Length: 133
Image 1 (cartoon, rainbow, N blue to C red):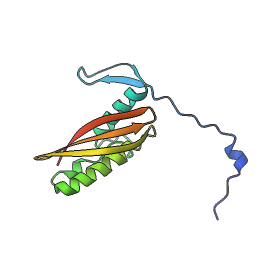
Image 2 (tube, rainbow, N blue to C red):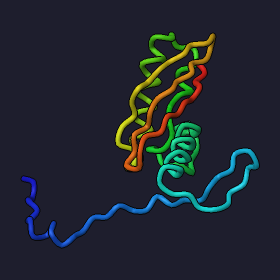
Image 3 (cartoon, one colour):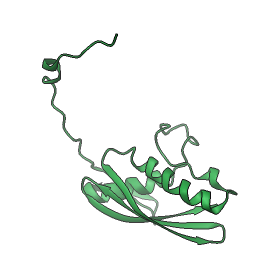
Image 4 (cartoon, rainbow, N blue to C red):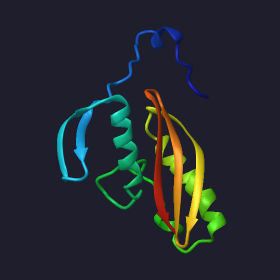
């Protein structure tokens, strides 16, 4: 038997959205300075998630990153379906991201350029990533 939670206990809590403020990374100079928020913070989060291979680094949670290295050597049709699923799964772990849509794929020999739209609570972002297959 599963215990039931009384409704009066749920009313004691208020839920709020935490700010998305974070330090700004400068990829060109490999430095961190300043603070970014909202859409810029989402862009940086998407960049980081898509550039961390899931399960590869002990410093990150198993819920963080994307699993793309396992697609190397697989058939292109399989890879395209899996790239979409794996990117969507990785990005939706961030509670500020509500949807990942409008996937487009461009195959060039052993690489697939994937463009898509990330819908967040702060607005939409068009982004792309290149996956080696």
